[in-house]
Image (cartoon, rainbow, N blue to C red; front, top):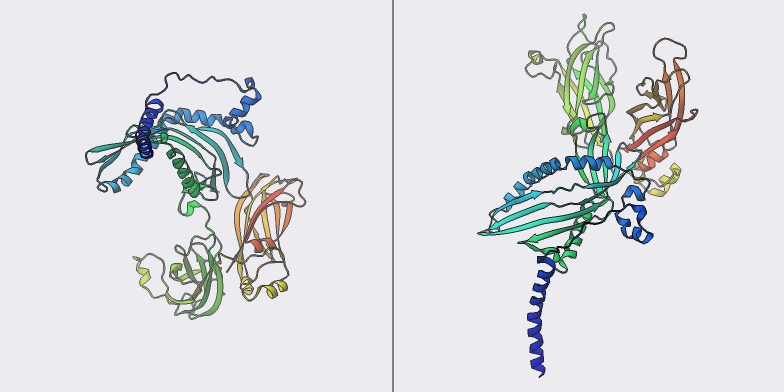
Length: 542
């Protein structure tokens, strides 16, 4: 009897499971309910407290959080534009997936892959609010709350031999909170260089997926597995601090390039220069600069009446693009009166340099860079220079707080001495707010450091000037115990009394910039009622 009962149990289990699945399929999947009624829409004040708790997750963010702004105009704009956006997005999807599908045709017995239907439906996404963040960086940060309960009709058909396999995606519901950053901001349309997108929370995604007309999401266990797999992949790729970056502008229009190193140039000598003076000699000097820089060119001393001058003078230039920039060398004959005659010129590409390796160049001087100019065939002498490129250290040694120099050297070991080498101090004067003079308000910033003065351009008739100008100071040692002084001054245009009027000043301690590599702060101006100055300071170690 035990054997018979066990055999009957196995037969019952074998037959009962398929029959149960078949009955469940017809009851819950095949036959759709016909008594579905439209939901009743009521205002919130008619709900009791228990009902409000039930619908709390569906309340828009601008209702629950005061820092979220209501943006119904965006939803109205999307509702009008959605039919056109639907066609544009679907067209982009088709063109983007064609090469991907083409890679699989001919493999795994697949003869064709194509969309039978591709539509995002008639329901656009809804923005339930948007939060705008104000930062000290040159960027715009906003966080929209997006929900999409769409009715897309997306059917993909795979043809394997003579069999057509259809995969349909429908009833998509998505809820996510992205952080969108537009940076850096610039005065070139569309006024930002990149878009970065990241997710602040795990997204909620729900959808239906039919294979040959059968809803796969109704299979027990498969629904949860697919949900968790999709969430894990999205979180791994795009959850903050991971992000997806979309470049908008390239090249010089993409924003100001940051310095990457220092070029050490030694102008050694020149040989057999042209005779330009009446007495058969020349008074040569050399001007040198890097391409793409607006800074004034550096100059050697003038060697009077000398066709074979020896300078042995060293200069330091800031490099921003090692692959694209060139060193421009121009040799002139100094004149006491009138313009200086050009003896010749030459350029050296920085890409030919090896970091930390000194290389000597003997350059044949030419008149200009036009290879077809017959004047370039004339011998104009040679110029000898030595060049060394030293890149900035990306992993600079940082300190946790202000310590005495002797204490640092005694406690940190021999590698600490490398930190106290030469470097570049970058000062970016961004903008000022609420500065006002008694007689005129045409403000500019005057930067004073180690007796050297640099200034921004004055801006006429404004209390909120925006400069965004960068200034560089090459230093032999880090300014651990020094301050930089910045004056905001108003300049009178035209004739009148009080040509200059102080609007406030600030002294900034540079220890934090050296320790952290960068500071970006807003400072209240001294001797100003409400004035605020925004400054960014970076320290780059060579």
